[in-house]
Length: 255
Image (cartoon, rainbow, N blue to C red; front, top):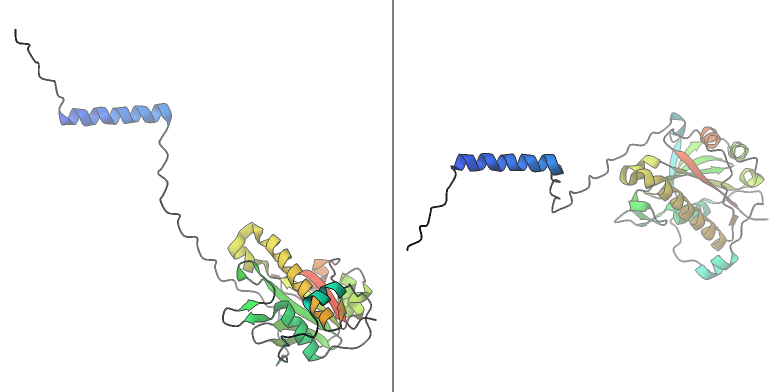
């Protein structure tokens, strides 16, 4: 006998589509929506916005002048400088020459790669959040790395006011040169967000060490000072509200 082969029943296309939709809806209810597919490429990170820094009226330059070019070859080796560096807290009266001040500032924040603008001390992402202020018997100055020059901001001797904000430390009052390392956090926050504070303090340490090593190589002395009240330092110097003092480095001829 021949077997009878029955044709397979087929559903209309519209019915098949309706059943498929019902099945998908049941799966969503039972197991939740399927996760969105992971993009094959990571989207590019947005570039940090340019940050404008505030300038207080009290910090408008009274005068500007260039510093002598820095010396790029010393008389003692780095190893000798490392071995002989010690904290100096007592200084002889007197001032430093422009050449001496310029050499110290170049070691701290001078531009060592003019083409790219890189500086002597490393900075996270080359954001360079630091500003250097100098207090001398002749007045208060601001260092401008680009062009290696100084801006005269105040003709008063503010070292005693700074010492008062630093728990009355005599080394701050008697130094020939007090370098105040202040930060503009917004510059680094624009790129690194909450981690900016960590990077800023690390950079302040790099700058202070460069200052102290250069001072030792020049026959000068200095000490790093972290005991001070930030708000009082800012008020004594008239710093803009967006700048935050991080470190003090008194320098001079040690007794």
